[in-house]
Amino acid sequence: ELKVEQNPLFLSMQEGKNYTIYCNYSTTSDRLYWYRQDPGKSLESLFVLLSNGAVKQEGRLMASLDTKARLSTLHITAAVHDLSATYFCAVDLSTSGTYKYIFGTGTRLKVLA
Amino acid sequence: ETGVTQSPTHLIKTRGQQVTLRCSSQSGHNTVSWYQQALGQGPQFIFQYYREEENGRGNFPPRFSGLQFPNYSSELNVNALELDDSALYLCASSLRGEDTQYFGPGTRLTVL
Image (tube, rainbow over all chains, first blue to last red):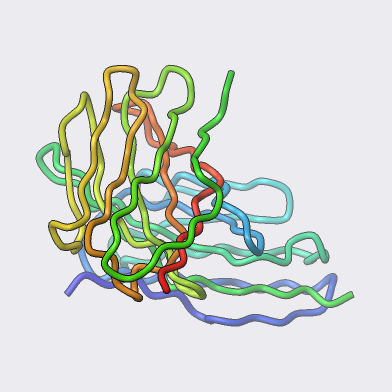
């Protein structure tokens, strides 16, 4: 069964602290995406990771991909309240021109002032 | 450049009815994907359309169907609505061969 699991599901952290969200997936893929979703809103693309060892950084967020371990991480540095949102990873499992895309379970992040 | 738009914003239907949701792609995008997001869960892939043909489908029954038009806009049709169809329906457009999808604001469907 194809699974994309995120850990933790809920995260409450103090401003200024660091933390990492993990995304594990159960089948081979070298294309992984991170999205942010604010309550009642749509999805905002954060990172596109397209190869083993890929690392992308934007502001206080850094994402990496290890295709051999089937693991991606989203690291938060010195969290601020504005980062409070739900974060999803998604794996592209498209083959032979047929598209298939699976989202993770989501991590709800709350940054406390 | 116009972003992805969806209509309507909200919709209330009763069980057994049919519904059509609409999506206009971002300018220049030729691929549209549809997702269902139940409350508190991650989006689930329904299907993708490229050049007016279905190009991949998730685990959704045939009563979920779609269309893509020559101008790349798209419709999602759901027949025989069930209570569990209540969700936020998101469409996303992209340019074939590029990796970033751009999501619309969504249509929230409530089935009573």
